[in-house]
Image 1: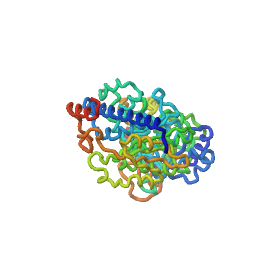
Image 2: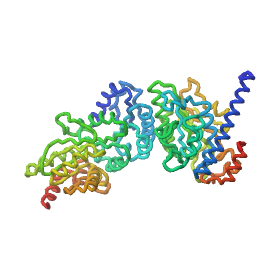
Image 3: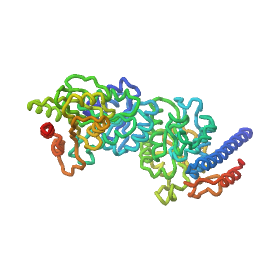
Image 4: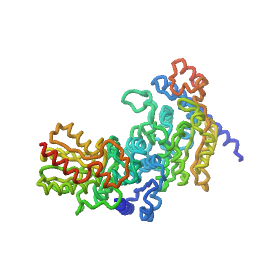
Length: 307
Length: 284
């Protein structure tokens, strides 16, 4: 995904003279082609994320379109106040990109995990929160974000995520994308966990359960039109995210559900209220937190049996 | 340098006029604090001369085009001195002075910190949380370079604000980027909210710190109008470094019973104290 980000940024640099890229000292060689196009619009801001975010706000308030890029915890929790005050309070059109989101960097330990980024950024007025499920969605999300008049946060994976879209979808911020239609349960997924969700849908189909698979890439603003009709059409609403259960997609949908007095049963998949203290790969971490396809299937079937 | 006597006397007259504005502004700030119960009087009074030098002599501004693309940008990074900035912007013509009669009213725009530029003309950035103005100003300065505009950016910081790590993050990047269109001014009044700034964090030697970060640093008396104006002039063209002006000031400057008394970080003056201040400032 990060290669797709670099490729898309390079293409956009040609067509958008106001585009500026700020990196927090990561992406070695990743942005060489961007720099070849216009080195004046690339800044390695060093390992100083609070300043980087303030600089981005200053650039945006001066008519530039900055994209801030570093590892997710450092571009979200590390500089949250700068995002709140410099970016959101000014409604500055800064695009914040976090790479290695969720458990992508499981091996690096909890300092590099990001399981609360969507929760905290969702609280900020005017902020849009997007978790694309694959490289195609990421490229479309970036283009869409640069057309917004205010701040956008995009959380992406690392590299090698499998493609989920066979064709280029109609991507709009705040509009869910149906990957596969179904009629019994609806699986709303945010981000790269989509590969597990598609596999879960396959297994459910083999068991005679028809699951609709939806890329719910925009966690804020929620696609409430989709939720309203999904609430009428399905026996069970399921949310899946590689993010804490507190404050992410599942929480956002639950808030909507409470406000609407919606009664369709709901099941949330996310990480629990804990740090992962042992070492492990992303797959190990997903297994530990019940985010693999088999765990998703078993909780869904158990819930459906309960009626 | 030889200065023809007529020019020297004109300059003296200009300086005197600016000093008169500073006295009027100090009085208005004291009156408004009393009327609206707005604190941070000491912090406001220490930076009035800096604001006057910037807004009435140095900055390239058009109050009728507050968003003009080539304007100089001034950020009050020590946002708690907003009561001073609000008075200065009104006197400079960004909005009618009569607007300030509604200072502190519910639903209004004037309070303890600068609002966003969308809320009030003349404001470049909403501040109040310390350590934000210099990074934003650096963003302004870098944008000016990309867009090939020759505007300058000034950010006014407090000495207490220099406790914030983000100030030094910005100083490092500005030093590396050699943003000569960026100027940081530190209102070095030797106090922060609850203690002497030097006892709280090891600020000294402050000018040398900026130099060590790749800045050109100038130390001046922050109440000397002529020195302020001179220090705020653009650096020589061959010097690409950003500029830091360490302005030595007195908290509560201009009113004897407020000077260097940190109680006036939060205290609100009584009606009698307002009258006394007005007499001392020579405006009553």
